[in-house]
Image (tube, rainbow, N blue to C red):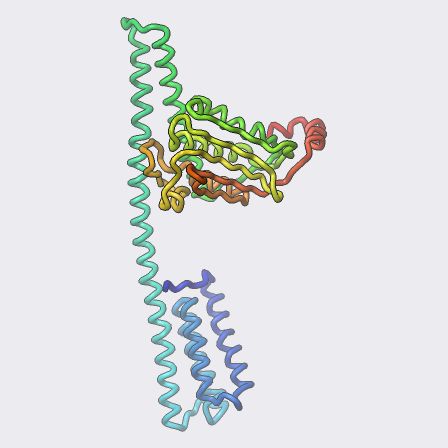
Length: 369
């Protein structure tokens, strides 16, 4: 079991540890007729041992010294003096002090070893993440760049006889590769914002149909090989969300659907407002995910082995970060009888359409935020 300690400043640790010893000593002093002065030593030693788990070495040593003096002065006969007449009490006092010091030093050493182990583990994970990221980027960058260079080189050759149809195809390849590069850069920037804690949502009133249709339009080409079913609850209220972040989250999820489901499969998008939450369910009738996939899909750099596909494995982790930034939740499960289902729930404020129109007319710039 790893020892955990409070991240308090050193002065606060001294104050809390000393006060703890004093409080326990006061309780023992009131109960001295019932517990006996030797039992007080066990209670004080227990207090010091507990403090050693949570605080640094020096506050614990201070508490151990003070508790020994308190036990001697207030509890060991004769009272209110540091004099100890009984050889048995002298031995107990010495053993008490030694055990308290050893306990504090030992606990501090254990904590130092654990800190070194955590640092070693963090370095190992950092190296592993950088290697994964480098391997992914080296592939993801090379492919679209090679396509852009090759297509543009063909277009720039004056002596080549390229038909108009071939030119259009080459331009399409350049556009598609540029879009892929832009998506990769967006994911890296978004992940950096999440990791740095600099992500701040900017919620504003938006219509859910516009929010849903934007990523569907962006993925029109990819979705053309699938059957799309869109179902939005009637009389859906105007909701307050950061439309840009949610659109990006939906884009990442839908893009994953096009990658990990076979052609001609059905992708369903259902949007409803339930229990004061905007609920978005994206499901398919593909092959679904393995148990390992279900537990790791939202982990950075994880890519499912169900299909060989490009990507850095950042898309779904960004989805999770954007949804949780709205105090929402996202989960994945296998569909019945087959396929996968992603569910997003976001607590949202709502506004009726009539009120929204009145608000928009009174604040014409509100919709541009």
